[in-house]
Length: 152
Image (cartoon, rainbow, N blue to C red; front, side):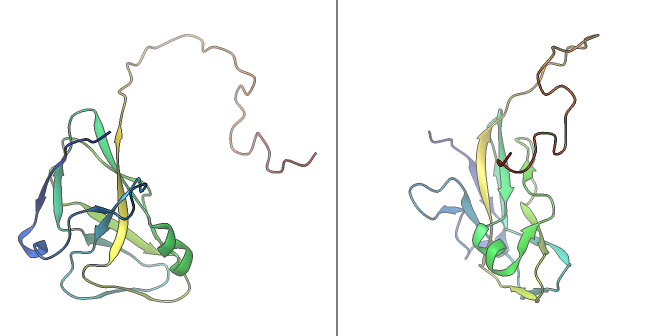
């Protein structure tokens, strides 16, 4: 399925690629750092990094901005709010809140692939207040209630 998404580059990002899918089977399109100078993230530090793009999603869709697995694995680079959500009515510059969860400083340079964006349909709930909810086997079991190991 192909969804048309309008995209606009900021003037200072004209030389950067538009979001791109790395392979035919890629779900997320790579987002690029639109920064003038390298940014060094110290361990534990977080910083907003511009992608230099604005998008207009069709109603009923969202964009999920997610960390890149290779950067997370190699350097501990992640996102504070993973996944970040871009609503269909947002028209500001797409920015990524990166965090260095590793033990060494990480340098982000102009044009680096810093995150990936997935376009997904969303459903809006119609909230119906009720005096009781249907029973389930799990009931109120929450965090860790289904166990950790498959071993008995």
